[in-house]
Length: 149
View 1 (cartoon, one colour):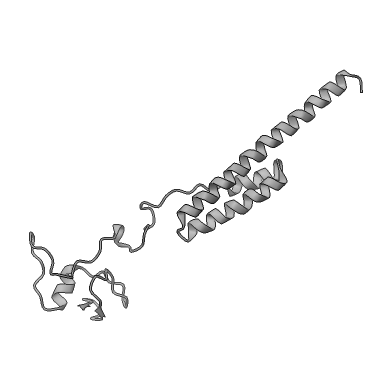
View 2 (tube, rainbow, N blue to C red; view 1 turned 90 degrees about the vertical axis):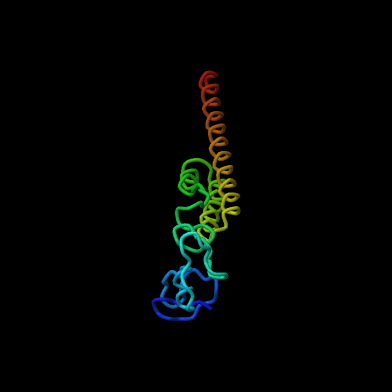
């Protein structure tokens, strides 16, 4: 058991922060609270007193700004597609883009990427389909005008 140097609360070994006050527990503070001399330069820390390494001193799988995969946000494009191009595929794209943002916010990056890619596919198909339909409409107008209808 380690002891917090700030509030003197007992903490289990290997815990990087005090659960009472949030003070970082280093191997030196844990060793001094147990009456052991701190590890000198070139000496390993006492057995069981080595807290796990967290980048930026923060626990968790992906601290903010460190190593978290970038998941694209297609919500704006999905809304624009719904308003300007294809309503059915736009609604599906909005649903998948929202699910991607939700999965990203809870840290499920694999599901977030899958939903974002599905939203992107719906957006692309909606825009391509709308361009084809508008192109056919213009072609039929030109043919109709040339035929004197």
